[in-house]
Length: 127
Image (tube, rainbow, N blue to C red; front, side, top):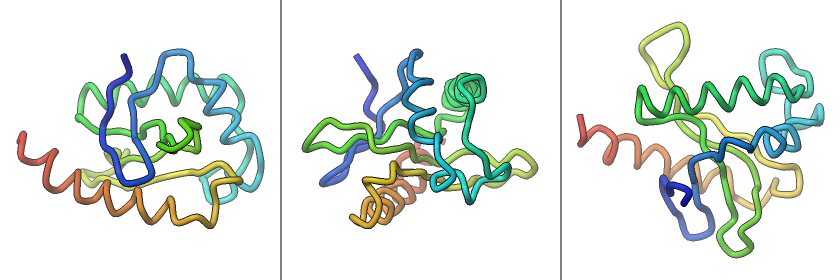
């Protein structure tokens, strides 16, 4: 059973499944969904597999990473979101990417607000 990280009124963040590299590639297969990322290019399946492995490792080590984002009403994969440790500092970064058909529906704002609350109030209570 997939671990649910948090739920909002319309969204669920869940842990990835080991075979989800294809979902990640479908998300990051266009210039529109990668234009604000460092390399600004669609992701290869190899890059998706590496990122997936990295997210599992981050979750295990830090208790937080980028997670699979699901629309609750439909069960449809609509992107990824989460809070991850910054690679060059001791800070954390909030990040998300949504499938193009999920843009302009307020999902990014909804999940970002919930992630900040979860990170500050839930994660650090374990501390």
